[in-house]
Amino acid sequence: MTDANQSPPFAANLLLADPALQGALARSGVRADGDLAAWGARCGEAEAFDEGRLADEFPPLLRTHDARGARRDEVEFHPAYHALMARSMKVGLHCSIWDAADAGHPEPSRHAIRAARLFMATQAESGHICPLTMTSASVAALRAEPELCRSWLPKICGRNYDRSFRPWFEKSAVTLGMGMTELQGGTDVRANVTRAAPNGRAYQIDGAKWFFSAPMCDAFLVLAQAPGGLTAFLLPRFRPDGSINGLRIDRLKNKLGNRSNASAEVRFEACFGERVGPEGEGVKTIIEMVQLTRLDCVVASAGLMRFALAQATWHAEHRRAFQRRLIDQPLMRAVLADLALEVEGATALAFALARAFETAGSDPQAAAYARLITPAAKFLVCKTGPQFVCEAMECLGGNGYVEEWPLARAYREAPVNAIWEGSGNVMALDVLRVARKAPEPAAALIARLAQACGADAERLGIDADLRGGERLARRACERLARLAAAAAIAEDQPALAAAYLQSRLGPDAAAQPGARDLRGVEDLLISRIFADPDGAGAAWARAKSA
Figure 1: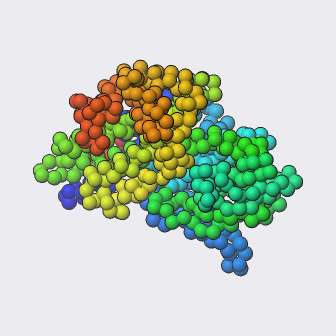
Figure 2: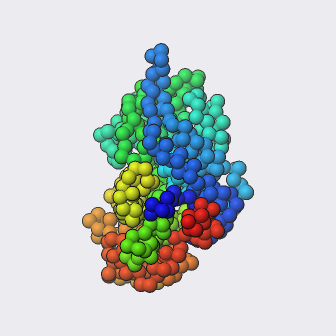
Figure 3: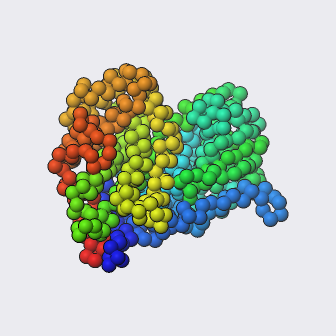
């Protein structure tokens, strides 16, 4: 392979090879060793990447009926998808922030540990993350109905993936999906017309959902109009008597990316459902769940950016042009260093946000950070992802654009997190809403962030932008997230924080990677893309010596 001037296949321990991730964990009080290092090795090996490729190349199939004409509405997946699900559930990506089995981890580290596992798992394959994210986040909504939560939580916390199509109460572990949006309303869920009529202690639900996420799950959180208004419900695939519920899958979406994961259009025909929270408080019941899924969007997008950076740098290390390795050529180094700085910011911001989620219940400052920075971080990191992967793909030239190489799949995957759980405009409006509702905590947070990274809060003008209304909401949202990222980097990398602040928020900031003046930290950034080869795994060491 080296004789043909082609880079060898990439494989590395995704934790031990990543100084930015190790630093983010250290700031959260988590050691980069033990089970986490083993997970990094597993996610970064050739077999995991190949499973990701197969799950994407052979997307799920809908089987509406069995051979005898009976309605089934099942979704079939390639074995590689099931292998990914089994591995990720074994380490608790779907439950570890709630699971008593993880009680050995100090409470303030659970979000960070799970975020690290998610960050690495999404580099192997992103599509299977969807049901894991929703299962984990669903508990936040189910807690509004304590008895229901007590019934489901032991199954949610099961670690042995059970792909069988049978009632949830017969299984050792379950996954949960979600169905909020309808054809006529989309983001405006208050325009939903799906109806929920009381039927004894339960409800009968009739209607349709235009986007129904992960329809192979064992139950779904949905919004429907009850007599008291828009309400949240838990809708299982099977009724309490063991018969199949009236959930009809009309078709699977043919998506640009996220192809290993099924998304569907569905109808509810006299479906059995159980209320979650009071009637009329559906949005309030769901919102904490949505906050958790948005955190996962940030972490997963940061992980995908890290994967793209690793692929681009790996290629530049091994590819020669004009008698020199690409990595030794100044302009390529400028591009890679700038991409590396973007990953430093995204990683630091994602884990600072995870830390805020850890202590938000007892720390008002952490709660204010989580409320304001979650939509801002999702806006910045998830919208940066597609352009970032495109630039990394360009570092590989034509190889990057070919489906057999991994960045084509990553490029198709990158946009979904910016759309799912609220598009860019929704995130900007959420930042505006939070700042207007609690202006003093918002102003105090901005001042603290500016102080942490040596920025001039007044010159940045974020407060003024927030007061400028919807017209400036995107500008305020992006600049707030950039400031929060700089503050997170500054905790242990002040030189990189200064370069990030100047190149992203300074008067000479440029839009394109490699066009920004990083003020002499290029070599430091390049050195931090990969850790010492001895920590990155045998594959990296072999490739370096080839």
